[in-house]
Length: 574
Image (cartoon, rainbow, N blue to C red; front, side):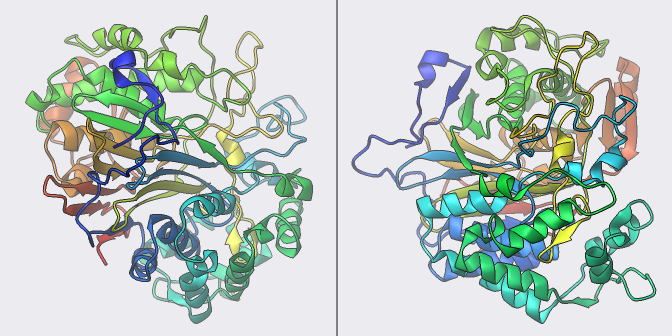
């Protein structure tokens, strides 16, 4: 069964951390699906097939994750890739261990809190920051996957790059979604400003390549071959030099150095877990905010009978909105890199604190405003000025032994910084720092930039267990800060409202960060008018950018998956 650092009874209803150690001598495999059951759910059919092929070849969930990520970086470069970062939550069904692998990017050693302050002392505009070399952090996804593979991989490391190498050389058809981003981004950003990205995505006369065009990427194939031979090729040698050349290219050069690349380290962290009704919900800890914020939303909802107020009711959505507003306010005020600031993780999920915050939801009108609370151990909240960016992907893998990967991976904005090296895009992850580094009183905000610091993330890779430690489901999404709301929606949908993974994914997305509530097109008009009557300010009938992927274990042990129709993914078995 799942092993915990603290007994749940000691922190009833509160936070506890999943341990990476297991004292059992005999593995407990009760949480594993029937032998032969496996599934991959990801945002592109090529990536799904690469993951399934790794499983067919005798690989496990980690091997499949390497194959999925290396292909996603090729066919879905607007969202993730070798030049980005990731968080991976891994459940080992044989040992019962639960581990979080942190592959978040880091700022250059020379970065200061004024990283995005111009010569006039004003914060750079978002676009100006994104398309500068200052936005690029040390990529962490490759180092993270190498660490996870060293711990758990069954196949050779090199096997994870075979599918991507072949696809890069033979070519793949540009999907409608990728074609839309190529055409849509060119007028709004410098996608065609940099020679590498211009030559890759545009014809000689500057026309964006259309859907169906057979796109080859020999530079990417060269990169994957180098990584297959040694993962450190991304951090040392010619490829690392190419990355630094792209970062420091004019205009708007950045400060990343070869020393920054060579010194990068992925981190093993303990998952943040909290009991919710008869389940245990586990996610990634800071600098990711998902493990705290998703669990805080659920904790705030726990006193209410959500099963009696389903997705067709005004009251069900009102409660979800208010819980989201409160959790987001806390997240914005407190969550950052725990190696640089004190993050009140336990305080934010403390049972008494949650009870006090949750009481505010029991009302007949909208809360007048959403402000952070003061959890135990904190004297006053911080401030934040961090934007919302959508360039991310999420996938879930369950192998035939019952091992589970829930991984969210990103280059931050669409096509990251728009700068390429080695056939892949470099992230703009440092814009996940607050561009305004101080609050109104001049105090440094928690998520201010600093040398070697990891920016706060909204990534919410989540795995849910029953109280016996049996795997129940894994979920997560891309979508910037909206990831938290997207992911929480699916958990309420499945755990409280009895929906299938696909039904939970297809619920309208409702994002309540602050005092404006974004509601996706498709919500019942009666519910919309009811929310307005209660005093909520809505930004309604809009599109959303979720890319939810879910695998759930049914009571008989079989697996069922879901893939977000807002993207191009699939959930398939070998």
